[in-house]
Length: 349
Ligand code: AN7
Image 1 (cartoon, rainbow, N blue to C red):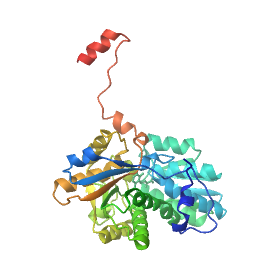
Image 2 (cartoon, helix red, strand yellow):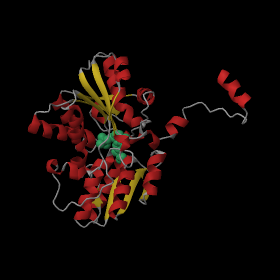
Image 3 (cartoon, protein in one colour):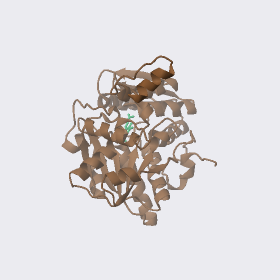
């Protein structure tokens, strides 16, 4: 099989400037994994799938948008790119900037970025700067810097990011033959939910492929779109979505409402339970990426949602991004001497 760069695959459907260059790590084309056992457990009567976005080149969905944003920046002659990030955007920007031969600067909230993401950004050679403040404050800083200096902003405020990210909706329609009935996904800075809605609407206008209802899920400690006001000090185990003032919050609310869906909050306990549930299907995702299932489960239990047809969970990032959340929560693993008797005694338990 020959995999094409994502932007080349969907060129006709993407609104990108002509100067955009190809900067690709062969992103996209991620599997839509059926989860029949989990669907039964949730009451049955519908098909459940996970869009496994953790299988992108840097382990998250951000790569779909970054191939476009970095390619555009390169084509317009930028020398450097900058972003604020809870981690995945940083790793992705760093990788695509490396591919393009551009300098990459990332600002992250101090001490609040998962190990696999920070390591990624460093491995790809980005200049990583910690800010003693929140993601929202870091974003404010990079927006101002990009206005004063010739450095391209590659956060999802950059419209080219959304062009790339909407391709996930195209792939889903290809795999299912039409749009799913519900799309459940985490919401942080709200770029992804906005991009999905854009993609689904676009194909629906061309091919009457249907529209999903959107269930956007924020972490309860970082749920400005549920409370209707910014959260000054967001806190959640799902550090990827530890965001108090989503840049595309209005668009996300509008997309959810237009779709006949909504944005809800899930507690950290619900998110971690959903993470374990997905892992029990062989799908290890980072905590934020389990938010879609956490929200869906809570809505079903509360009787507010009765799934029918096809439901897709967008699993945005790989579990390997955040190993600490697992190892810290687990009991310590036993140590035995290298002797068969010791092993058999332990297994007999
Ligand atoms: C795994 O990397 O904001 O609602 O700076 O890493 O489009 O922000 C990450 C967000 C969901 C939320 N799942 O997406 C960043 C950053 C994972 C993420 C989201 C993020 P948006």
